[in-house]
Amino acid sequence: MRNTLVAGNWKLNGSKSSIAELLKGILVGMADDSVKPNTEVAVCAPYIYIPHVQEILDGTRIKFGSESISEHDSGAFTGEISGAMLSDFACEYAIVGHSERRTIFGEKDSDTANKFAAARKHGLKPILCVGELLEEREKEITEVVVARQLDAIIELEGVEALADGVIAYEPVWAIGTGMTASPQQAQDVHAFIRSKISALNKTVAEKVQILYGGSVNGANADELFAMPDIDGGLIGGAALKAEDFLAICRAGK
Ligand code: PGA
Image (cartoon, rainbow, N blue to C red; front, top):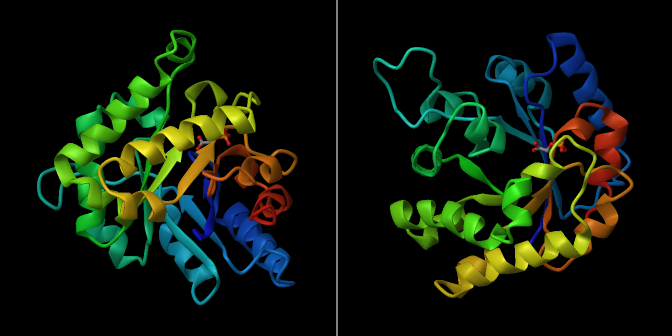
């Protein structure tokens, strides 16, 4: 049985005080053990707040990570943050290939693969985001797109590398739009991802957590997480309020 993982992706939001309030609210809400023991909880924060998050979460059940990572280790790369730096502040996760990185900042499949490799190299678990645009779904090429995004990682690092990370299926049309994929739509893509991996390595396919992301909230999380191949969620908007995030954390299988 795979654990459920509920990971927050705060994006470009928060301040020192709002983050302290949010995390304290989540910790208080988790103190009654209403979040099942096999549900892992994590938050991915803007780089600059990671030391602040580390201080608040030290010794608690909530893990944390970054929203991106440099593909480079050190040197003349102004503005970048390396995997070693993130490990230095006890990060466990690094999101790679989020659709906002791909579409707004022009990160290609190969950049995402290099970032995935950099995270692994420094002992971080990459949360690899994959997902199709609305026009790609309408053209019925969702599986082609997702397969291409996965293949970039498999070709660079080998299929076994996927076991060191987490996959998040995030249909781009569902992100921040309130248009959640139906549980069956999501399950179909999750099952496709798992079967594609299984054709190469069954053990990896059974082990890897595949999260759903895209307008998850307290009202739809139960149904989504009940699907056999959905192992939790990557949560944007609803991760910014303690009560909303807790409602999703409590939905774990
Ligand atoms: P959303 O974002 O929950 O606000 O749709 C999800 C994400 O971008 O990871």
